[in-house]
Length: 305
Image (cartoon, rainbow, N blue to C red; front, side, top):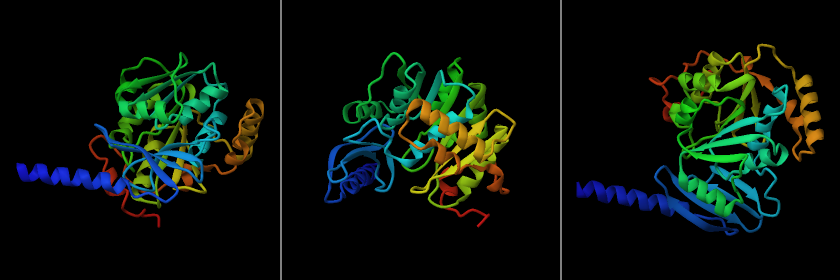
């Protein structure tokens, strides 16, 4: 037993030590092993940026520009807001599963101050970090619920115009937030014509990505995929509408939203990068509560390659 404890402590210390490998321009502001994950806050004094980072150097869970904290730093978060163009109305009720640095909820709150925003975040330390280091502050329209995202969705009676899924544990989505059963629960919490925007990290086209495509496609009438040009992120946009929107129509709607709200991201340009899930379909297995080998599939190449 003592030997096991010593091994566990050694691994924990090694984990923390790894996190301290910084670039010359970076400084460590905070680190902690929370109940759920390792958390560090890193500031780049040259780029004038601040990030939440886990023990994998290349993985960020959120970030801001220090000289413009209301702007969206990461490409995937900008792409996620193309979800607005799939609604036929302004969003009144929005759910974020995963808080991170809180940049995306703050951005939505800025441009849609009348929208009611719920945020399901399982880790109370993430909320504290977002408040202390990333200018996040809840208000009467933007509330954090300290709960597992799936449990929150299962228990709430509220329905939403948009549900953003962006919950990660280190570099992978917790398996219970990937399954067909979970997505059916998400679907049941959407208003008529509602939209789901999901951040799927896939450094290369792998079996996990393929299974995510077929799993979403099994639940939602239409699935659109947007690939980051500067990152390894794919944004899945799942809708309740049967009609397929083409790039020209989507880009036109997105441009109008961008102009009317004076948003600082080029939604029209993002609209042109839309691809339908039919372009990605394979014979991959649907992920279920009984079968969701997330940590295995993410290392296995797609059968489409």
